[in-house]
Length: 225
Image (cartoon, rainbow, N blue to C red; front, side, top):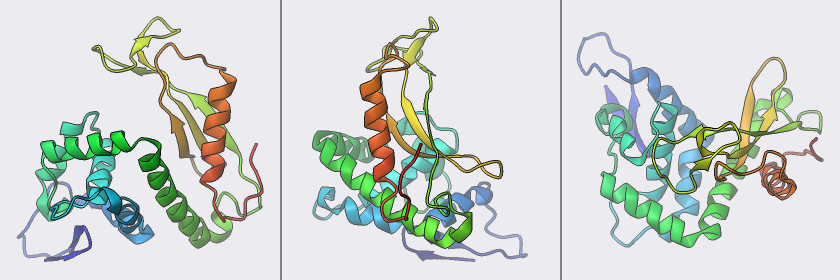
């Protein structure tokens, strides 16, 4: 049995053997996004880029793309794995609709990115508040680790270049909040860079650090190191 609440169906467990789905366990990601308010936050900030009479909400499309990446996808068309399970993921936009939204957001540039970052910061503040003393900033300080990661490319993709390890691809710089021994790194900011970008480029580190600090919002964190 299921009913729709927000973007996604709400699953119920029953023992009658009907309505079996193969990706029910992955619905934990969907339920997490719903509980923390990420779906509604993205929908709100991306409303300016929703065309009149549009069928698909830009917030859901972006969240569906994030889910597809979490499930192993590495390109826009991999959103099809969600489309194959409507009882779990609801109505998923077609590949052309997804591409049109990405083109629209890319054309908006920094304005669209700022809106998305704002939604992330609002949701992160809410989650850290709920976590209480278990939140990274509970003591008034957050440790942020910056790390460059090589991402291999097997074709001439945009900004793909030879890397310092004699491979070919990209070299993004990512900021992670350290959750200590009891947790893992929480990604808070990232900068896409070509494969030949330097490992210790000061300007890139400053940019990512500023993006990370902006994600702390009103969490009570005074700074990071």
